[in-house]
Length: 338
Image (cartoon, rainbow, N blue to C red):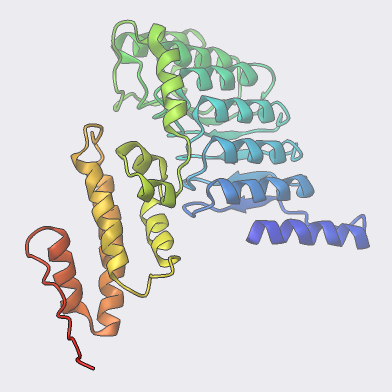
């Protein structure tokens, strides 16, 4: 793995020349498949660097375990100015790990934790840290995080005295009309209403949501536990399919390819049938689109192999049999009289 190799190289170079190293200041690695393994390796590399000023890792399928490892490495880079973890799965637990690391970054100018499933507890953890110091903060993105009114007000309060603040993005949360009015009033009182982005995509709120938040967040923590492709195929469920992460289709294909029988295209069909079973389950709400993308990947890989081997007709027949559209004809057995 790249980050693991880089970390090892940095360590070895320092043995030969203690004053040398890798004075890396900017690292951008968005829309890849770092996930927890890559984030953990990167965390170890960051411990060796200590010079990073900008880190951007949006859309990498990193869960709370990877975020925790990443946060520990970030703590060694006290000159950090920009941190972008947009569209990863921090959850409140991961948010608390990042919050702890943020205490070290008094030069921080931009923080992007949008679409990270922070929830209210996560937002409150971030707010608590930002309230003390962080006078250079300019842009803060915390939209689409299922944060309730209480969490939003905590963020606004934390940033109300930041003279450098240029932008605060909180759209797409669970504030509701009353919550939005309270947030705008608080920003108005702080003289920063022009820094607050418009609320065009708020997901609303329901009576008593703040009181129920803790229970809902505990359920969310459980639902974001990572599952491997083999675990899903061994006992397919809709929740396990979601827990495969953002790159679930690729994970399933790679798992099938790694099987000893992968030279036979029908193993892809077996995985496809198991995948299809979750769509009919009672817990299959909103899982159809996810299952369809995975099915496309599995069947695409199967037909590509069949095309290369001239076995498309045979694969089509096998698929129709599994779908119950035609009957499988038993192979003829030829007996020889000796």
